[in-house]
Amino acid sequence: MQLLDGKATALNIKAEIAEEVKKMKAKGIREPHLVAVLVGHDGGSESYVAYKIKDCKEVGFKSTLIRYEDDVTEEELLKCVDDLNNDSEVDGFIVQLPLPKHISEEKITLAIDPRKDVDGFHPQNVGLMTMGMPAFVSATPQGIVELIRRYGIETSGKHVVVLGRSNIVGRPVSVLLSQKSEPGNATVTVCHSRTQNLPDICRQADILIAALGSPGFVTADMVKEGAVVIDVGTTRVPSDKTRSGFKLMGDVRFEEVAPKCSYITPVPGGVGPMTRASLLINTLKAAKQRTN
Image (cartoon, rainbow, N blue to C red; front, side):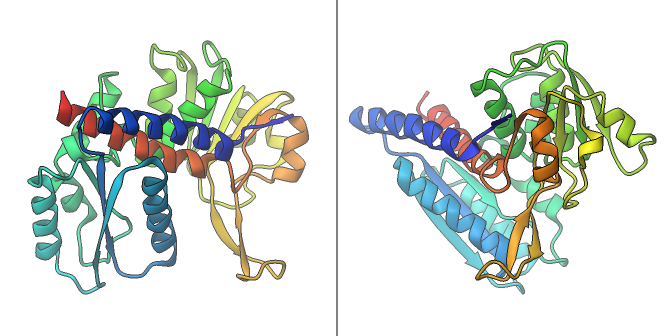
């Protein structure tokens, strides 16, 4: 069993990006600029955005945080999006989800200029990605594929089983791995809450991607010997062994599943750092489009 070390891989990606930024600046081109829009004080969103700002600093990006309280109106937020769309000093931006219930996430997503949509959620980017054309790919699926690529895991002709059909992870990663590309060329099965005989299907997987948000869902009897297991889950569960009173738990019962695997991602330290690195990849791509 070998760990798929997302933390170490993300550090390598960040070092590569930092080198590219140095070359840009040496040519007199300004550094990439990422803006994060944060509404309210959700704990998970706060920490995730803080990490993004830290990542930007480490690779030489400029970053800006725009904050709004929970009672911001949809109109105000749409005005902010429009301003960022038209700001030539901004290469890419994200509106951190989830948003308060009185704001339509769909409306906000549709308002973002696809050329600055470094989260890869706009339908135009999703459509281009589905067609195998250049696009901003959402960060977690892109991070998963990059991790597979950098560890040299064979996907061609393999059976990939994806647990979860969300627009953020399950669906896009299933498309990416079924495309005529490398990594890719896999036969992909997408499972969800209505799937019958789920354990049987999981046991057929050469590569099992768990993206359910259901802690400890995948058990050893659902995984075949030698499978690659990629755990996307990061659920906070109570713990009396940590100072914070909680720990992060994946969708996979790591201790019992790991001995059966050829490769497996840990939680934390697996897919999470790759998601963050992918946002930097997209922002650099957006900045390069500006200079071309």
